[in-house]
Length: 401
Image 1 (cartoon, rainbow, N blue to C red):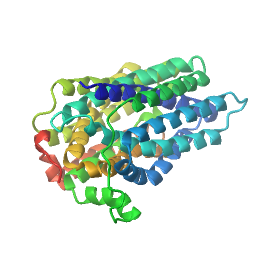
Image 2 (image 1 turned 30 degrees about the horizontal axis):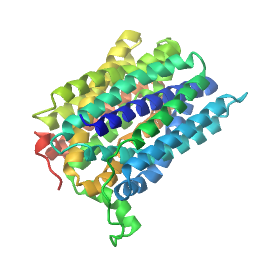
Image 3 (image 1 turned 135 degrees about the horizontal axis):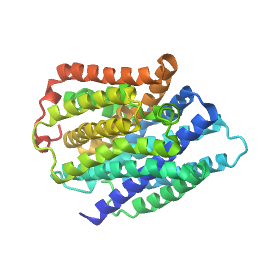
Image 4 (image 1 turned 120 degrees about the vertical axis):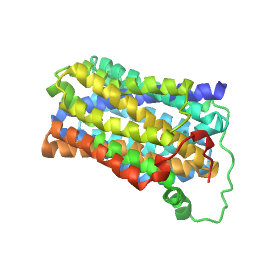
């Protein structure tokens, strides 16, 4: 494993760790201030709206400028925003609107970091090494996602300001790690004759005219939108399972624990055959696990359901990421990665808003169960609509169009 790849994986680990600590602290603190499920939904919406507005532009920036520099600056700005959250917690009566304002700025920064990060990894390895590198990157992500919520829950014992101070230090460290990577993005011809609008929308056009990519991205989009339970975990921890902030950290870590096991296995033994059917099976199990979690009143059963949810989701994530990188030419990777992030990354935040909204309408448990049922419906419909995705066999045989 090269030095640059090791630095990338280290930066990814500590960056995800910081993001998870921050997410746990924000969710718990907002619910402590409001006792309102809808307020947790607005946490997601505040981050989604700027992502939606800026991600496609950020994809064009990632294809035209140094992706390493974009990543380093993005992490530095996240450190600044963590300092803002820390300062907010020092006030006598923290303003919920200030929380939302800082989260909107965070969403803006993430809009630029995500396309640059997703399209940066292929520059560090060969095409044949890419599926394995994606698996190791996913493993790093999932291990950090396990440690992050537990770390966040432990930090909350000392107060939210302790959690935000930790995020500040971690994001600053990650910025330094990223800028230490010596591989730079290839230089692009900025005077291509295309307009800004044409460049920005090129990623959408590519996805729209590539059914295998469109099917993979939209399948996960609707699975995450309907089946996401993350926003409701503070309510389950406090009011249903009665396990407090420490239990919340474990609940947040459980999906990543399941995902980490699968991603490590994929790192040593990548999927060799039947990748498309494996992706659909993973999303179906994700929906079933969501239903089990929604109905559970046992902390142990809930942890097991969330672990199964994460393990099954990892299969889908692995196939989708490898497929998208394999069939996308490098000069388009930033913009296609932006569409990928808009479909998947930003849909996490929109899914949180949807979860808060349906919980306010129908109640917390019915909203989670309905989401799982919706995910199963999506799997059946997409298997019929996208036969080319359903029939994908070996990922290593896929090439850029």
